[in-house]
Length: 111
Length: 117
View 1 (spheres, rainbow over the protein chains, first blue to last red):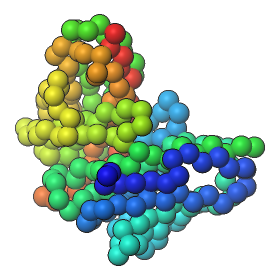
View 2: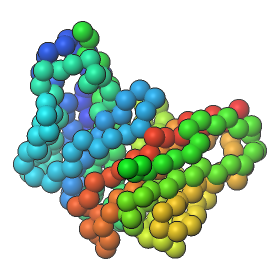
View 3: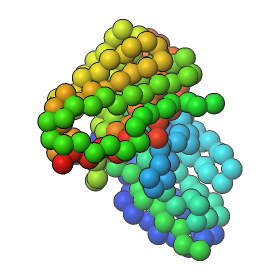
View 4: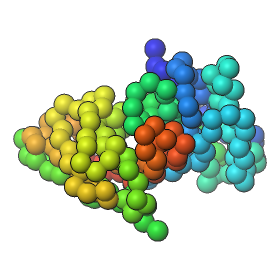
C-alpha cells in the first residue's frame, strides 16, 4: 500500500466548477506539500502546511493531522488550472527533508 | 531569479552510453535531491545531498552516481545507460539544516526527459 494516496486519479471539470482533490497518508508527518505540474513542464510548489488551512488566490489547502488527510480546493476553476496536482509528505522517519510523493491527480478543466 | 536550473531538457542515449545531468540552485540551499518520475508512479528519490560534500542513496540509486560539487551544484551521472533509465528526472533543493528542512519549501527544476534506446 502506498504511503501517500491521492483521489481521484483523474478529474474532468467544467469551467467555473468547485474542485476538490484529496490526499491521505499513513505515516507521521511534519509537513505536507501540494505541488502543480503542467504538461511538459516543471513542478511548482503551491502550498506547504503542517496544520489548519492556507489560501492563495482561488486555491485553498486544508489538513487534518488526526485523520491524516489533506484536501486541495480550487474555486471557480479555469482551463489554465489543468495540470497534475501532486501531494507529498515529509515523514518523521527518514532523513534530510526527503518527501514521499503521491501519484498525482490529473485535472482537466473544459471551457 | 533562476531558482533551480537543470540541463539538458531533453536527451536521447544509446544503451551503454554515459551522461551527466547538471543541476544548479541559486538560493543558497543546503539540501539537494535527484528524483525520477515514471508513468503511474510518484516521484522516487535517487540520491540526495544534505550539504556540500555529503551524498546519500535514496530509494532507487542503482545505476546512478552523484557529485555535490559545491553548495550550488549537484550532478547525476549515468555511467552505462539502460532502457530502464528512460524517465523524467527532476532536481530539487530545500533550505534549512539539521532536520529543519521540514519547515521549508521545495523548489524543483524544469526536468530532464531522458530516453535510452
